[in-house]
Image 1 (cartoon, rainbow, N blue to C red):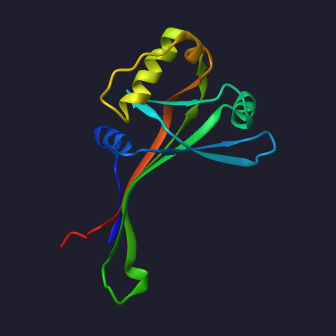
Image 2: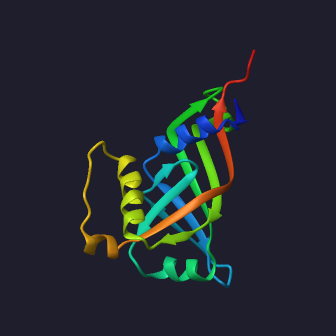
Length: 157
C-alpha cells in the first residue's frame, strides 16, 4: 500500500466537505501550540469557523493570526498481509491547510458565513437573531497553502 498526493482542487474540496470536524492549530506568543476540534464551513477556498467571542484561542489569534487546520476522512484499518503487523495502515484521506484568520464583524457577513457553516451539516435554512449574531465570533480563513494525501492506496500492478 502507498500514500498518494492529491493536487486536484475539486478532490481536495470533496474531502474537506466529507468531514464533520476539523482540528484547528494555533500557537501563542511563546510558541505553545493549542489545538481545538471544531465545526466548520467551507466554500470557494475559504474555511469558516465559529466560537465564543472571547477565550484562550481568541487571545492567541489576536497576537498571532496564523492557523493550521487539518481534516481527515476514514477510519478503516486495512492490511496488505494480515499476519504482518507493519503492513497495516489506516485507509484515509487528509487535508492540511494553513492561512491567516480574520474575524468577520459585519452582521450580514456573519449571517452569510453561518449559512455556509450550517450547510456543512444540514439542508435546512436557518435564521439568526441580531443578539445571536453579535454574540458569535466568526473566523474567516482563506487557504494560503494546502496539502492532501490518500493513505493505504493499492500499488498499481
